[in-house]
Length: 241
Image (cartoon, rainbow, N blue to C red):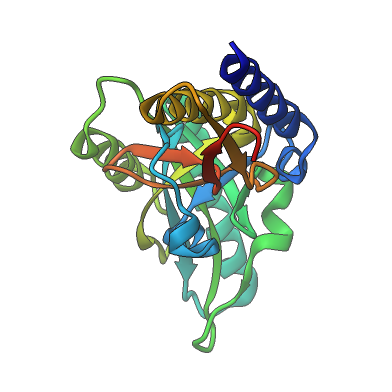
């Protein structure tokens, strides 16, 4: 009975930490985060636990660059704006396609009001460009091929004006919307693993989870799936120690 009480107390402590630790302030619930490989390396490999919750990513994204090299600047800017407006119109027709801006690995909103500020000089003379994100929502029955195919098809069918081109930049990435909402599920998985680990040693042992104040972390676990985890470690010791 004593070991059960200690385990219950440990579980309650873990749940309290999940509500009050720094991890809860890591992002607003509506933030859309770009998943990159660097996220997994944020903590030492020895602190990355076995317990993770697998979750399908919310969106697959690709960065695109709309470029134009029409010599006359005024016409060049108009051609760029006209092509980007076509991007916006085409996206509005397709409920599976959306647009956004990439800012420090957080996807922001994108609309026509941003056209003037987003067009910049390109590396070549008489050339300008605009860069933004095209994304598609990921369904349960999606494969990597179907999801990437939607983005590729969208880019191809947008009408280009004048000397503009739409180029894909880099590779496909995944996003996660509102990571903080998954923290309770990860905490529950850790608590269940802690109970089983303590039970394997017998009724005279107790378990403590250390590190639950860390932020929720994630890494790519498959073509369209993410593994969500909290870096922590378990300490199992005899009762009373």
